[in-house]
Every structure is written in structure tokens, then in C-alpha cells.
Length: 292
Ligand code: DGY
Image 1: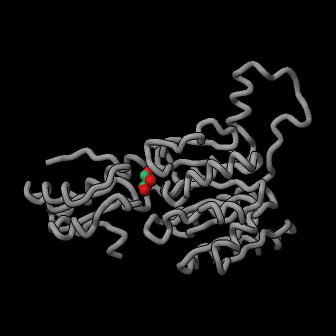
Image 2: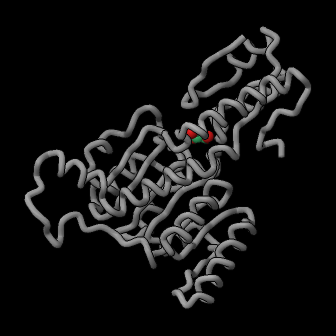
Image 3: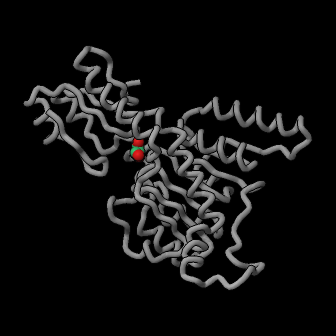
């Protein structure tokens, strides 16, 4: 028995009772996030749940980096301007954006994807780093320490880094903030009206995690009143929809949940998901982050 399910829909009681009646023993999200799966309901019907971490780490981090660059250098606005035939010669102030080098990148949630993004921004663009994570990310700490030492040894300006004690510290100090927490009750509307107000007026906010991590209605208001504040969003609070007003804002770049959409990665995700389900039939363990 096979179902083709949407990641943007919630799966619980109805699916798992049907699956177990049909003799199904395993279910795999083709995603690393599994906030859409009611794991208790799956357990109740004896269905093992799997997810597909690892294969999408770099691809997702690359999309976060792409959105960062696109927002910092106003690529989408400039592209629209060009296509509209509005370009009539070089001007010193035309689409002036931000230089990333020397600015501070803030990462909220330094797991696999957040750490990969942090490394890309620090090593690729020589950004300083501030991050907040509930868990100690020693690999990220080791990387930035070693990289800062390498720059110093080569006579280059070393990058600085700090593990923040609170999330608000990141919001206040960073020029670019990228969100990478898992979505659960504690991270729902993590970025709300009050927290948006704490960020720099010209900050750039990136979200490739899950839409409900941001209060999207509050974000739309914030973007309207702060034209220099920019966002790059891959995910939305009620996918596939966007909150009214967001689509009209020039300081927002929006893409349709494509962070893991590279050919190699999608093939890897599909393979892992299939192995999760088939493996269970053969008696192998199902890969599920929550069990680790
Ligand atoms: C994930 O794996 O959770 C992604 O959002 C899917 O692209």
C-alpha cells in the first residue's frame, strides 16, 4: 500500500489507523523535519516513523546562503528593474546593498543545517559569528576557533565568534539572522512582534526552517514600517499560502519551500525514505532523529 503525501499537511490518527489496518509497519517523512507527523498516533498503531537527515544539510544551508546574498545585494529587485526596461545607465546609488565581509551573522539553532550555514558564511564571506543553541555545538566551536586562528596566522583580519547566552543577544547584535530551529511548541512564533523590534533596522532575516517559527502577520507589519529590513523566506506559516501583504513587499524575497531541492539531495531523500520503509520490513532499524 502506498500513499503520496504532502509535507505541508499534518499526518496523524487517520493515516496511521488506515496504514496499520492495511498491515503497514513504517512511515517515512521525505524530510528531516517531522513536525507534521503525530508520532504518538503512529506509536499507538505500531507504525515506526522515519525521517531523512544528513543528505539535505548542505543543500538547505546553500539555499539559506543564497537567500542571504540575494537579500543583501537586492538581486530580485534589480532583476525586476532590469526586465522592466528601467536601467538607463550606471549610477553610484543604484541598488546599493550590504557587504557581508566583516558583518555579523547570527544563527539561531546550530544543529546540522545551522552549523553548515554558519560555516559557509564565516569561511565563504569572512563574517563574524554569533549563535544561539540549546545544545552545545562543539563541532561549530572547533571550526570557528581553528578558522580564526588560521586567518590570524596568515596575517588576515581574524573573524570573531561568540555563543550567545540568550536568543535576544543574537537578534540585537547580528546584521544577518538565519533561523534553523526545529518547530515544536517552544519555537512556535519564536520571532514575534517584540523580537522583531529588537533587531537592527537594517537587519536581514532568513528562514529555511519552518514557517510557524515566525509570526508572519507581525513580520508583514514590521516589513511595511521598516523598508530597510529585509527577509528571505523559504517557508510560510500556512503553506502553501502567504499572509496578505507579503507578496507586495519589495523587501521580502519568497521562494516555495525549495531549500532541499537539488537533484542529488532529492534523490538521497527519496532513497533514505524508501530504505526506512523497506528496511523495517526486512527488520532493519528505521532512521528517526527523535529516537537517537
Ligand atoms: C525538510 O527536510 O524538513 C525540508 O523542509 C524539506 O525540504
